[in-house]
Image (spheres, rainbow, N blue to C red):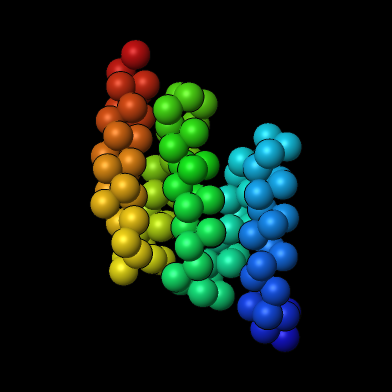
Length: 104
């Protein structure tokens, strides 16, 4: 199955995601990291990659909605991650930014 093939090659996928992110395609990169996480909920490169993208999306103000979705995805998918505190803080900050954006 395709899923089994993906699971076997998580290292390549995280490399592709990193390159995709560097070329400015942050949502595409997040989707690739998400595939990795669905194969292995503990993959630290994928968790850190999605965290980095979510942080960029909300600190730049470019897409706080997407940031909120990414933080929620991480909290749902990798609740045992040692980085869960960063996910929760990021989610709170992104939700606040989103609320401010809607009033302004």
